[in-house]
Image 1: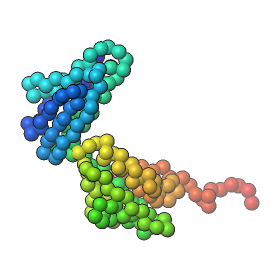
Image 2: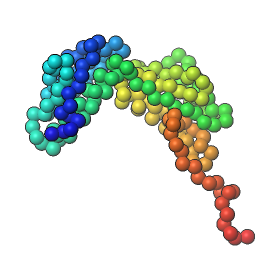
Image 3: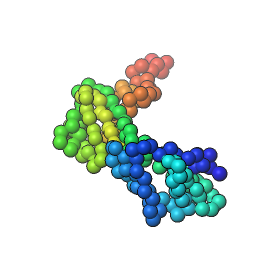
Length: 183
């Protein structure tokens, strides 16, 4: 049995959960989320706890058991606390600001980059070189952060670009600093 899948999930007081037609609906103080489940997994609610059971012992059902438990745990955390990803911009003249439903960025290109903010996501720029992405869906927050980072990923020579806060960029030595030995 899946070690993760067999652990019950505690249901917080201010969260409502509903299961019908292999779909889980979770509503909390921050919002509502839903997810369709596989037919190989059944969800039960007993004593303010959520239990996931698999209907068969096939390899795919065993794989889905832990996956759906983790996904439902992420949904519970999302509707109660929410998720946050932080990005930092490194480079001379690189900056970002939010205008209406668009994130406008100056990233050293000949033109400004406009990133439309998806529904369900909040983006803040407390400093010109800091981007904070918030939302209740963990997958969506991570995907938006990855899309923004993909616009101008950090390069290994000067370290310029968009990176996650705390991300380490392995730096390379430039061509001028190398010694070849030939004269």
